[in-house]
Length: 233
Image (cartoon, rainbow, N blue to C red; front, side, top):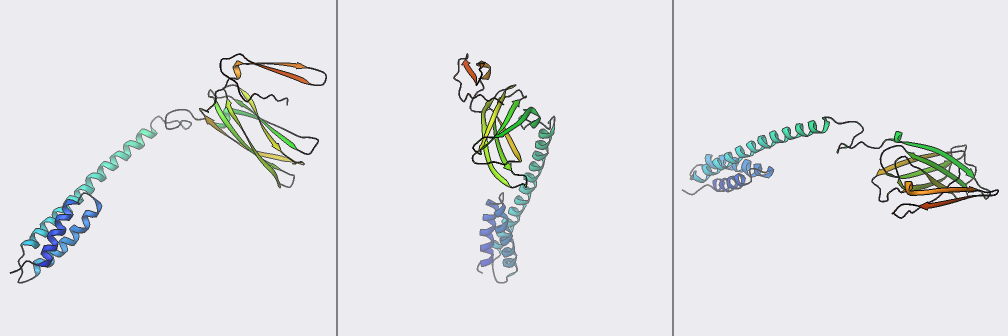
């Protein structure tokens, strides 16, 4: 008697399924091999050796697959519980994942000033004081509105390095914009800026004359000072 074609196919699929039983696709040839093995066994006038081998290989492959699913599922569940516990233990609401306290809006004082010049331009100023213990960079965005809430213009400005305890000014120039009723602003802060704050090394002297004020800045530190600007508000 000849071997059953279903039995031969079941054996081949069963072997492939066993080899791939630890991955998701391994279950597919095992199930197909199991079905073909059963068909081969019920055929008459055919040898059943191949079909029996296919049946055994397919059952073993399915068993290995189910065992792998159980083991990996158990490990995954225990890993997730451990991770959540480590993240929540001793975690403060104002700390990041590294345990470093994050910046808050309350760390900064902001004062607003603006005026419209004689040629119809509007200048808007945000004076920022850094009350945190970190040097930060700041970026501000401002929108100007008229009394009806219509947008008259938008502008942005930034501060490259604002040291702890220092105060600096952001300037927003609205070219050919007049009749501003109110402003709305947002300010974002970034720790560890590219530049360093050297304001403590800069000596500022002012001389008040009848028609102007002369400001003299002297850098007494070892590092070069850039972006020095003076505003009288």
